[in-house]
Length: 401
Image (tube, rainbow, N blue to C red; front, top):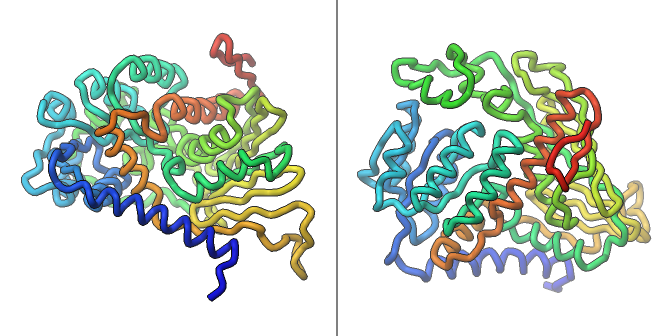
């Protein structure tokens, strides 16, 4: 079989991932990293399942304030794992080296900083903060510590995304003036599994959030209520804006504007459909379009330059030359470079975290870049809630209306 440039790149990407995991498998079982998991909902359970595929770690404790989730997580963790409802018991355990934090957003800062103070290394999901001020505090504290903190923007450890960065840096796109980002999902609200309130510590779940009665929509879909999350903008756009920052070598937008409404899911506070426009230094803008009423196309980014366009998502990368002829019957040329993804980048992202715990090198998604991505999402939400465009002053690190 002939090996074209396209098939070579596809194969090479798969070989890189395979080599990483093969190297990890050769490490053996000694010097295992002992991990506690705090907040064991769907995402954290997924992380736990991936960690079980990686050598050199053992999940020895799990924490959740809802008993059914706690018991489910214990089934994934190591045999005999400790089960607690107060995360401080994990932080106080000197035998635990690191923690995975999968709580709602409003808990991220407090638990992360307490874990760092307790000498634990941390994997915390994105967005790392619930406010811009929280993120700034996290950067200051973590960077002055000796702890390894990896954050959940896994594209930075995913091979075809790394290739995308190399293509951008090569100059093949020429001047880039526009980045189109999008994420489309199909969500519903109003019907939830029953919750046994005698098995849920609702007060502890709320933490520092305003006191309020239990409501199932806030428990199951907390991302879409301002007390706990930031809607699709912080949940989804943060991933893509992190890629924009990374590929374009920028840290924050000059301005943010946003429009959003609850056209379909009126039970939520955050909009089910949103349009964000961000102006950046280096003479380009980015747009994010998102809705929870249609899942066709899922999510991805398009970097549009004078000499070429890069389209990338979690399944593939494609680079198109702007001067190439369109394929018959389309407005799209054949891609000059095309790579399909191999596996889930979260696996290699967790592997990067474990490797950095041992080497004490900075992880791929360290706290500063995580704060910058979350900050841009918070700026978009600030514009959305203010109802007008806002500007960001990097010198004073403040919003200017």
